[in-house]
Length: 626
Image (cartoon, rainbow, N blue to C red; front, side, top):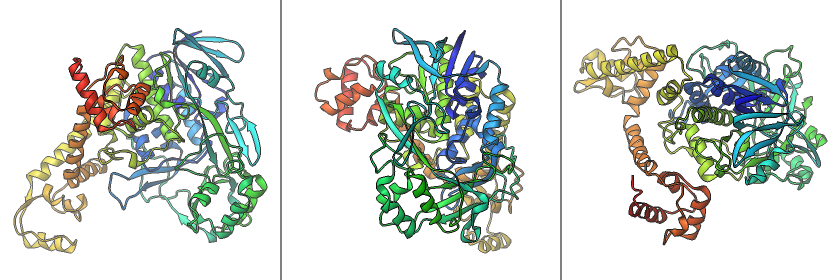
């Protein structure tokens, strides 16, 4: 059988990749070891969070599926960091671990041009450094123009609990034994990484009187711009907050060498920003306690797998099961908790992401793309974002078109991929707002403004959705114009209102647009002076862009300088050894990563501004100054 695209792996990256290529009209095969685990959530029962929630909005703006399925599976939703500025606000939803994958599988099964096959891929077929297909463990060969690897944690995966090390995937499924050897033979540098998950406990064995309630927000919130909320926001499933204590820490310290990590059983490097609880106790020894969240995994009590399970967020460990019992029972409210599933660490192979192009096609093998944890990332959202871009660019390559490369000022997905390709990873990469230098431009509220046009041009956004977006932009401009045209004067009733809300009174006339720039004034206050019959989305855009106008203009100006460097191309065949006066480390890094623009070169660790200046002079002298 011959396909245009074969996607290996049915996790979050594989789902988005296969949907993108098939929706673009390309015959696609999605291969997974177990169809029941498609779009599985093997770790935390949530989607979103700081930066990650914005990625989900970006996926939706481009025409991806994660946001829609997350809205259908949501059982509690919160907007984070609402007391801070809009640059760091993001949505986070507790997900029903049964509903989310069920909804995604339904979409996949109903998608034209897409087939799903349950099988294990053992080898790649490569001819003259160009992918030709894959070979299954049965020996069956499947031809394909393009292959996208989204293998998650299955490449030589091993489960670790204490001193026990068992080959396998997150649910004990078989690991992929040979693919990483194939990749190594093709010249790929293979990394060994580690992640982990906490224990799950019986929901009925918790003393909730000793916990603090963590409710959802009292309003309807959605990831998708379709704005269809499927959950009852007035009756959301509660989460609860507890803390570790001195007793917990003493148990961990006493048994530290029994953990897989500190006992020397782990080969892989663990996540810096999501460490195990034993790692937290060691690294942050001055902390008296660490917060933990008790998160339901399903709202369906009849669900035998997840209906009565609580996930202890922040309590990841690889301690032996007997020690885990002591650790859990030391926590306030969990003294008699029943553990339904013990925590474990998992280590797996990944490739050096510096061997990728910005399109997520590999540099070593033409038409071979990779996305998700195989590229060294952690998190469902990072995987889905990469999968979508890999799928889009695979389709564009089949069509003979230029790839979609999102810039750092356009999307968190652009920041993520640029960091992977230019900087690489030493530990599992987690997207953070601090990684984005233009985060005021990359907000939760404006993902569609930034990316919807791309989704439409590519063909993943239909005409009706796009027309709704055009109408939204028209309304935003209409509100701006009204606010600029209408002026208020220092009348008695106006000044009394301003005084009552803690704003300074008027001495002269002022436009409503200028009034909205006051930090204590909101759009709701503006409605006191003018009728604004528009959606909350439209008014939110107007308020944020007006209030932060000066900061946004500065960020746009800084981004323009960066774009000037991005427009200065570097020839593919350049020999950095021939450039005099560039530092040796810079030559080595430039030769290894082979950036395509001066902007990319400037972000490589070890390449200094002086090296960039010399490189630019060299390119200009050799006729490459466009």
